[in-house]
Image (cartoon, rainbow over the protein chains, first blue to last red):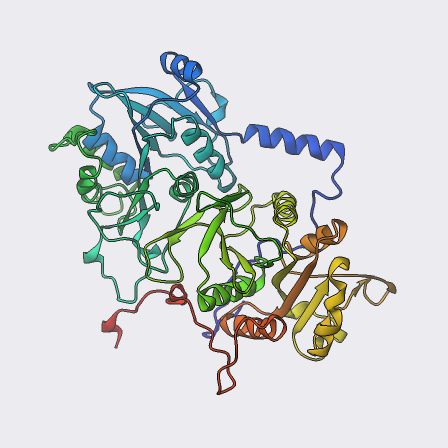
Length: 285
Length: 255
């Protein structure tokens, strides 16, 4: 497509299906089998460690009062540095999934190693009904709905409250005013109709929208009437950094006393999270 | 799957359902936005399905802080009108399943007729389709009785085009490029004898707001959703979420 200014852009059609054919119409048995196998391979599974899976089996659902889901490098980094103290949190499960960009299922029965992309679930020792899920791997569009169904479906809905932390580039934020880099990072919130607590930041303005895992979780909670809130941090830094992570600090007040915030984050952890990308930027060093 | 926003399930018996196809220029979706926003239709439920890409935002029609999802149902009981707004594309390979869900919901809800607002690539029209206005309709066998009304309005039925143009002109079929689920849903509704009308506009991608107004105005001539103002124009209300269609503000220092 040529624009008004003359440059040629390759635009994708919003109609998605360019062609008319529906490959499912005239599918033979072999195609159907391949499709079934791919679907099976792409299935999202929640894996619990032995002691938790026993309690899940007996009551079919896990007791959970607060679920904190962190999506993206900054949100997950914030949880690692400010919340997850090794002496108070135990890894209790993970979500295993396979897609083009997350080939985790080569070892579907082992949890992701520290530092490896994946979705890991932790439980607070002092208050076992508080769970944290850190998601750092890519989840394909067709797996998002299933992820929300499987993870939230394995938890007891009564008295459950969900908080999602996520980060996005500043360029995705639409505003009538011009945003300079000095304004970022900042937080915006979205809540389901059953969420009643006061928010520490403004709600996401129209016409901004959220997609990806936070959208899938929020949609599920809205439909199932589970109180849920999403805090989206818009940042102008590409890599995880400590300033962006600090933006999430006021959120933990929403969680009340159930999740304790480390006032002095572990410097070691922060350095580990933010230093990963140093090696590549050696142009001026 | 339809999930009611209230404790009780609303009744759609005898209602007209309007829904968009996610198609070229999003014309159908924009038109449904205009109808919901102008008629102030309250939200009655969600169409919760894994066939659509998840998406959430803050209430698109007012400054009310209300979470909205990728597929929601709105209703206007005085007009006996329901609207299903779809805000995200159908996932690849899930089109067939999505159509099946839609048809079974339409059948079980007892809608008297369903209107699918859609669009098709203007550049793929053949010679006969280039003539006259860009609006076309298609009716499923169960809704053939409104054919006369539509012809009186000057609407043209979507022409069938040759499967092999120039070689064999006897083999003809309906061809809706860029129409998303339109053709499939039409075929399903014909097979299941669901009363469905497809109202589509040939258009190109770009600023499709004028196309949405054209489509909504045409639909209004048929369904009489809104009275014309004394000046002759129909006062459609543009939803507040249509702002910033072309991106954020620009740096003032540019000037």
